[in-house]
Length: 138
Image (cartoon, rainbow, N blue to C red; front, side, top):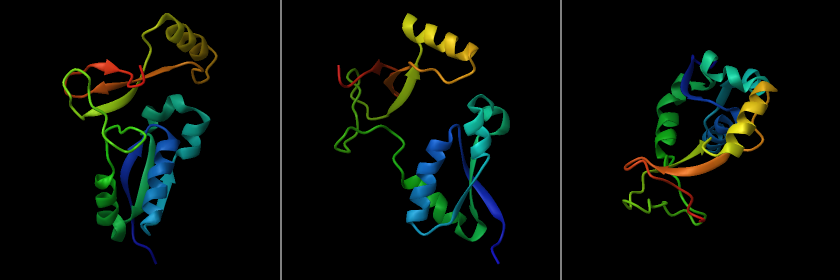
C-alpha cells in the first residue's frame, strides 16, 4: 500500500503541470494532479484554489524534488543554449506575457468581458537581472 500523497509543486495552468508530471513519470515516479479539471474549466480561479497541485507518494518525494530542481528554470533557444540579455548579457531570462500595446489591451478587455482566455497576447522575454524586455527574433 502506498503511503501519504505529498504536494511538491503548484502550477497556474494544467499544461505546465502535465509537462512536469510527464518528466517525473519518465523517471519512474508516479505523479498525480489535483484540481487540474477545475482550473481547465475556469482558469481565472487558479490562484483562488491554489493552482494545479502536483503530488507524489511520500517515499518518492525526495527523488521527485531532485528532478524538479534539475529542470532549467530560465529560457533557452531552439538549440538548447541559454538566451542572453542584449543589455547586460545575463542568462537569467524568463518568458512572460505582456499587455502593453493597444491591440493586446483591447483584446484582453474584450475577452475578459466574454469570460474566455485572451485570443491575442504578446509574449516577450525578460532578463531577471536588469529587467530588460526583448524578443530574440527581432
